[in-house]
Image (tube, rainbow, N blue to C red; front, side):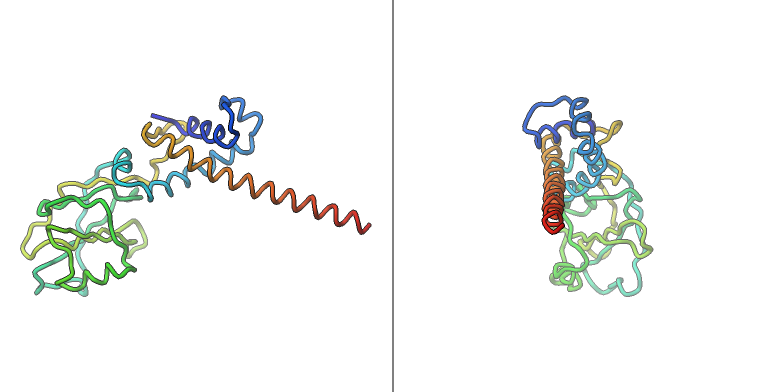
Length: 220
C-alpha cells in the first residue's frame, strides 16, 4: 500500500527525470510539492472515473442500499419489465459493481440520464432484462447524494440487492489513507502529467512576463 507522500515523491521524480528523495525534492521544489499535495485528491477522483472494473475493484467498499419509492410518473404497473431505484450512500463517488438477486450477472458500468440509452429504457421492448441488466446513476432529486435506477427486473420479482460495491469520495491517498500498490504507478503518472502542465504554464507565463518587460524597456 502506498501513501500520498510516496505517490507525490514518484510524480516529482517523473517530471524531474532523476531519482530524488522526497525530503530533498520538497526542499528544492517546495512549490511543486505543495501543489502536488493540493491537487492529488482531484487527480485521484478523476482517475477513479476512468478506471476499468479490474482496477477499480481494488478501492471497493460495500454498503447496504436503501430502496426509494418511485414517483407517479416512473411507475409502469402494466409493464412486464419494471424498474426499482435506490439511494446511494452519502460518500458515494463511483460504482464498482451492483447485482440484484434476480440478475444473471453483476453490472460494473452505468448509463447517465441525459443520453439516448436512458431514453431507450422507457420502452418495454428496449429496456434491459435480467439477462442484460441496465442501471442509470443520477443526482438525487434533493440535490444530496446519488440515485441508482435498476431497470432490469420482471413484474413480481423481489428486488433484493445481493452485491453493491463502490468507491467512496474520501478514498484518496494522503499521509494516513493509503492506495493499493496496483494503482501506484498509474496514479503517479497521472499526477506527474498534471504537474507538468502546471509547470509548463508557469514557465510560459514567466516567458511572457519577461518579454513584456523587454518591450517596456525598449520604449523607455
